Amino acid sequence: MKKLPVPATLLLLLGVTGYVFLVLLTIYHKQPPLYDEPLFIPNVYLFEQYGLSKEFLLNINQQAPGPLYQFIHYPLRCITHLQTPGIRLVNTALLGLMILVLTALITRIHTADRKQAFILALTVMAIPMVWTVSGMALTEIPPMFFATLSILLLWFALQRQESALPVSLIMALLAGFALGLAILGRSPFLIMVPAAGALLINNFRSTGRWLLLIIYCGVALAMCLPVFYIWKGLTPPQQAFTAAGGLDAEHGMLAFAYGALITFLLAPGWFYFRKRVLIYMLSGYAVLLLLNITLVRWEYGPLSVAMEKILPAALMRLYPFIMAPALAVVAIYFVICSAWRAWERRTEPFFLFLLAAAMLMLATSFKVTHLFSSRYVAQAAPFFVLLLLGYDKLTYSKVLRTVAGMVIGLLSLETYFLFH
Image (cartoon, rainbow, N blue to C red):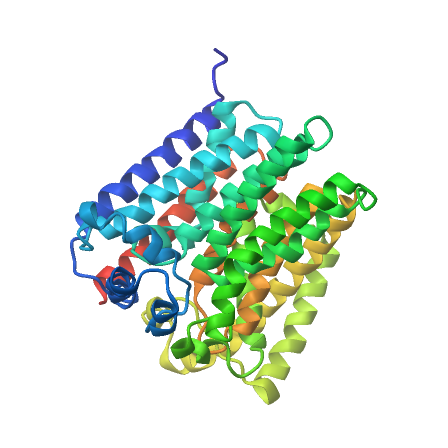
């Protein structure tokens, strides 16, 4: 067996150790449900009482996501007893399964053997937001798992389109079922339906391709649209306020800035960087800073608690106004680079499908008006892992970035347990 280079070996050890540490940490966290965790558990008992019925769907309370959480935790209640840390370990287990599904995908869509594919799949542990949604009994990981599974099944369907169309159609049906579960977990995964349109590029006249996508999208929509019809929207009636008020440009900007952070940690080669680009970015920042101080008045101060210990009080008052335009510049730069990559690979339907899914998922934050959370960005994590293949190598630089991402993720997760 070919020996792995030292950086690849280190990345393998880091990824496995990071995941095992997350599992052990989740077992150690025996605190009662906190943050959003207590909101979802009563709805499991509601599901036990009414089953999958109109009464259950209309009476879901204090939970904006759909009923996938209940579908998963209800049958597992005999094991978890709906207590911590058991209910949290459900998500860490699903994260492990998602890593295996990513490995299977990477083996097929990237020139990598299984060991290298496993290493690349483990880079999901370098995405800080993943730690929070995996180490707590929240609602993001289950739909992330099923969305990733749907991509794998859809890939199999596409590969058998010409040689075995009946088998291909069955795989598309299963992929649609997995996507339907993902959407029932969190409605933003609806974006995978329009994103799938990218798979028609260079195949627009292919009857087989149209059949596959109609089945894939049709099954997914058939599973979730009746629920949305009962709700008269994408969320239970009591949570309709989360999408009220139109669009929030600041939340959308923050989502793309966080997407840029994920991209830098996984594959900085995605970005185009020249001296001229730096000049443009600094000029853009100066303009946005002036507008922000005089007109817009956007405020966003990441790491404010830590910065308060470093910066004087006078500067801290300006800090949120200074950081908001900086993040806006980063977000715009990221979008431009992504558009350029799309143009470079405009003849590759599967790549464009992944790119569309990632960017549309980030864009859903424009519609979330009540607050912004990095958890919304975490939902795009599997798309980014697959999308950025080929834009980075297994080097010492990647080792350092992986360590940085894992440390940030660990600290983010521990913040919830230390300050609640």
